[in-house]
Amino acid sequence: MSLPIARRVQRVKPSPTMAATARAARLRAEGRDIISLTAGEPDFDTPDHIGAAGIEAIRTGLTRYTDVGGTPALKDAIIAKFARDNELAYERAQILVSCGAKQTLFNLCMAVLDPEDEAIIPAPYWVSYPDMVMLADAHPVILRTDAEQGYKISPLQLERAITPKTRLLLLNSPSNPTGAAYTRAELAALGEVLLAHPRVLIGTDDMYEHIWWAPEPFSTIAQVVPALYERTITINGVSKSHAMTGWRIGYCGGPRAIVSAMATIQGQSTSNPSSISQHAAVTALNGDQLCVATMNEQYKRRHDFVVAGLNALPGVQCRTGEGTFYAFADISAAMQAKGLHDDVAFCDALLEQQGVAVVPGSGFGAQGHMRLSFATDLGSLERALERLRAFLSPA
Image (cartoon, rainbow, N blue to C red; front, top):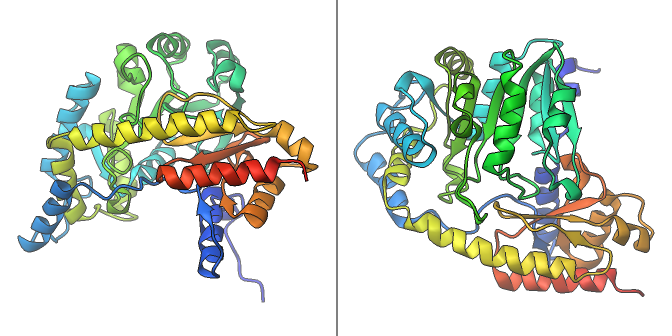
């Protein structure tokens, strides 16, 4: 007997990053020597002072339900963070705390997209964006980019993509998977286009704001184009910046009406995020940020090592990133040399033959690429590059 599954679910595919991570874990459990460069997760432990705040929350009884949208203390810490880092002013009613920025993004899509609406998504994109849009019964409109344009959309591309059905633009800078980041001038140019289309909302995913080494400081679009403030939802979290992936705290600031609608959706799904995690996140945002800078230095060192190593491999080209802990390499020439028809086959063969797990670029909307996470130690990265070289060497 076939049990019914909703059509909206049938349109959605499993996350390729999670699938690759799970496969690497299964092979490792079978005794294989696997180097996994799949997961977008810091290899650092949560800093001690933040962990201590979580323990304090348990010991002092901060273990009950909170307001759906987050505790006043955490909302105030987020307001202070936006003011300090991004020159953005919010009130508590404009802040929503969720179970990770992934839920924040899902809430946003569900709150603002109706059937037949369109959401513009630059590619390469984080794997979940198109599926979230489809779960909201809307249509993802993918804007393709390549290394020559720095994996960033142009104002002309954006202008041509906007239609009367366009409701949302999802912008991720610095980008997962490419590490590419928009400059202030580039954000301003995109903003000029968006100012002419007042129905279009902007969801800006700033999760990697503090994993950053570009020449100019990080900027977010509502900061650069203040006239877009009233229709921009600025999304962030503590998972990447403070090595708190398992704590599941994401947040956003935005227009009251939209944030309220997002909170309504959250109230009928998960309700509030963990009270313990929220207490720890207050310490993360309000406390000494030296731990963030220290981790960033390590990521930059690994980035330089991995990008140089990839570009020394035959048939591989990798653009220098401005942030994140990912390298996104063009492997189209290497695929051809190996006689492999696509990047999925390439990554499968690399895993089977050399025990190196990476994620195919097609999962991010960019066929002929692979994404490597360098959120691991330099020794593992060195061994992974050695195995890649062996895989690509003529037999």
